[in-house]
Length: 324
Picture (cartoon, rainbow, N blue to C red):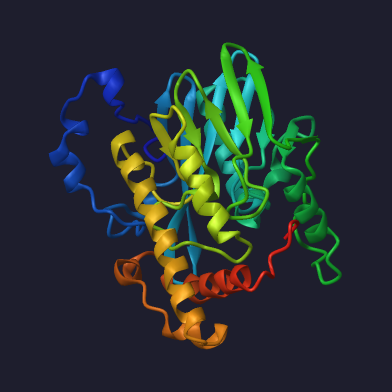
């Protein structure tokens, strides 16, 4: 357990003044992939906790989609007045595992949980958090969570869905101890209620599922063109470290480069859907015919490619309403 939860310090160029881990040679040596095996990891390397700045940590845990493994990333901020967590994990057991890891770093209680993505792989374990914590979410995410809780076919054995206690329409600024933490809505993207967490002094932006590092664009509830615009707004911010919601947390330089790679991937998927749509190909056939170039080798391409094409078709057909 100790080796798996050992906290590594992410190499910050500004803090360390360069050095081996920030060199171009080291960056080139890291495989650009979302596949943990190709990346050189084993299951025993997870969960992986990295210190991004004083009191700021990323947490990566493996999850599976069919036979594919990839990471789900959370962020937590430790202050003298409590801990803020951005995004839980996909079930109660894994979220409790993260809570235990936080407990190895600090005895401060978890006081705030930001629901950046309302999807189950980030919220299904939220009942493991303290009941008296403040849960922040966008109004759209609250509606999505309420709809999930009220599904007629919802299993009686399903974990409880925790509802937000505070809503963030556009921006909320929290002061926890010496940490100023901004919870922001930069636009509809992966879920429609996407929140990000920004630490202006540390220049760290946790982007949750609006940034999938080498994971194929997952669009089952997305707003494709708005998602691209949202990424561009994030890129215009004063940020040194962009933290993804899936995929590996690498050096700041690689993360910034991969965010642009991801934006271009989004544009490639949209362009391919537009090409097939203009040719009169049905959404179902387009999902089978689509070709994505270099993205064909990205994690989850097989499960997410057709869904992405269908979602862009919905956007092109004007089927994505203001609230969907």
